[in-house]
Length: 315
Image 1 (cartoon, helix red, strand yellow):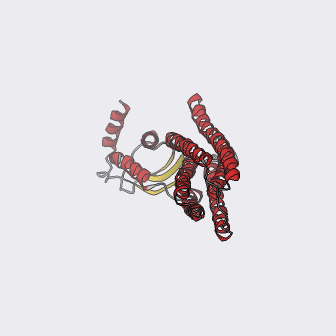
Image 2 (image 1 turned 180 degrees about the vertical axis):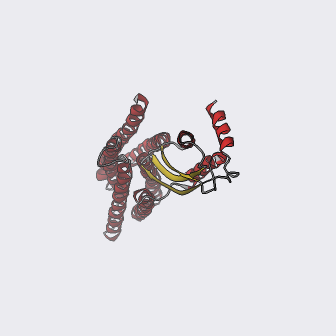
Image 3 (image 1 turned 90 degrees about the vertical axis):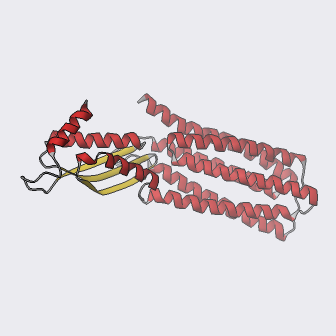
């Protein structure tokens, strides 16, 4: 129980780090952006402010998803993670639209940004901080198998690319004096943000709509079932879905009708344990069914052979 509690604490700790870094970046970008009049820096500041909101939603969702199953949520609260990621995709999309409109307004009214050393410094610091945050969140997302942290890492990786684009735009303006570059880069950043938001929402919607688990994980599941092929005749009605970092698997398993209830239970228990060991976060339910062979025809599902196999597993 203590290990589970520590794992949950690591998730919320990651979101706290993300909020802290995003806050520092938003303040520094906003100050420099207003002083220089650079739309690129201001658009990046807006994105950092939205990062704070997104990470805060993630923090609340993670706290909620950690709650145990109850009467109203008998499968747990794992989908709060997916819901938070979906809300984050909406926030990212709206920020992209805002930046795109601002870029057009800047272009139409021919507003010129002031390129200063402060602009280069704040964007350079922003890139360094975002690199750290992206690597940190991806590591935590993989370790904890968290969709929310994965979406947060994707969000900050977008920031990384956009910040690199912004600092390149400032450099080009400094050399060529082509201030229109500021609006062009801001528009490109906005389009990339919008594209990423749509991509993220499609990914998250699979979990919200109870889509089957990913092909890679499904292949692992099939390999486990096939490895125990000598104990069952077949499996069917195999269904899978995910909620947060939990994967729900249920199936029907055809077994020899001559096996005792205790032996049937032992087989299903062994298979469930093997699946859970191979697939992290798996919640497996197996419904055993008797074979339809006649009492004098059990050559395909020899119960004695199965019992010998169970004894070996037991040893």
